[in-house]
Length: 333
Image 1 (cartoon, rainbow, N blue to C red):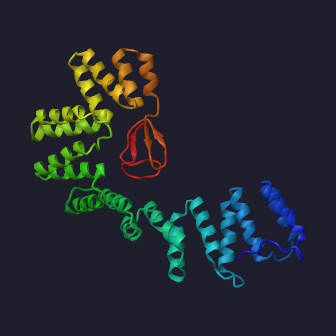
Image 2 (cartoon, rainbow, N blue to C red; image 1 turned 90 degrees about the vertical axis):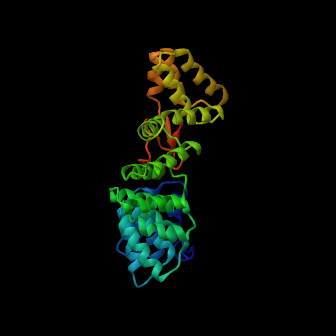
């Protein structure tokens, strides 16, 4: 247990905690340094100094203190020091070093917090295979799926190994839209057009459409490998079922607009807005149909996509969040 201060022996250091309580970390640090200038600072105060350095964003200084404490003969390496050390490594972007430290530590001691952190760090440093094994132990199938999908992307090819990772990914999360699109692309490339179309039909049936480009991609595949009318019937069916996905309505309004039927295009979007929460992307298209350029530009410049994991917002759609690198977590906002 970390001892903060002993009133009988070190009453002067009570001022340090007064500064800490009041959030004056620089004053607390300065007082600590002056109190032990030229002396050996007790381990608990040395540890406290590391915490203060972290508070003022001196992560390198804090890290050095924790490394010294961790290797010192006078103090037994404990979980509290390990947690602080790992936190500072992450703050400094030294994720590989953090992975190595945690792996070594867990060989000697059991610590649930470090066990929980490790797979996410492995994911960050792109050791997806190892991360997947840890996420399986944590019973986190979504992250297992992300790992296998990222491993497929690392291969960068369209061979059987690429498809096997995509199939593994979908095994753990069959709603992973990006994996379905990439697997469909693999099937089309290898002449398995029926399998490719089946995957894309499932994307529509399960409301996994995340952008207008998704629909245009699927339409092009139906136009090339099947009957375009079948695709149109799928979209009409989703709209007739009162789907809350805005992109079916945007697609139909765009089609109406391209055929010169402005009123139909408006009616489609009005129907959606009357039945569902209206995302900014709908308002943008509605403004476009009204011919109000100022309003259209206003909505065009709004952040209309958001990642539900890290809450970052973007003007454009991404399959993999540029902020947290989670897959298929961005949706229309």
